[in-house]
Length: 259
Ligand SMILES: O=C(O)CCC(=O)C(=O)O
Image (cartoon, rainbow, N blue to C red; front, side):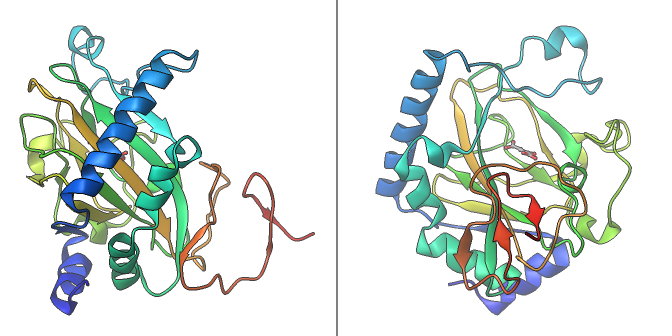
């Protein structure tokens, strides 16, 4: 159960690390699912690296980096559906966002050892802007993370700056906002880092000898509507808690429809 002090911390700082949301046995099941997913992806024609491109690292360094960043993993394995609906996760979301919690999307972010890609500092806002800025993310940690294996860094309080200009709308000027301008969110397997989509965040390269596996669940208040029809994915709109007060017809694509 999330405490009122944790809610205040989240509101003030735009992020919150919650310890032990998933038990060790649950983490183990999810690790196996991630590993199986990656083997199946590698054997398919859909396997590729999703490392972010750009000028935030020298090109010779950038081309060596790999990120396994797959969306909608719950369509591949029911363990991920259980992960999204885990009572501890749902209660934490409801504590931070309000009673009504709606899924936006899910993605797996796996940074392989020694060459796991970095994320330059950015807000998630430009990717899927919404009216009321309730959109937030849970980064579910399946491994212990630190600066060496590419943990997430956040700038406390940066959600209060509102939407900022991004380079080509993807990331912030890396000279003005190096990853080191954030605080490292050092976490253990089973911990969940929550942050608002305006909170500036990023993560360095995984230069350790171990894989870093995180799964991201992005949610919103269902009354907070998108201002652009971007980043529409399967499963979007699924209610994780409460009700959707806007009674509307959902189309296959998730796009707003009045007929
Ligand atoms: O998992 C990470 O290291 C960061 C992911 C991220 O910044 C994002 O998906 O917006």
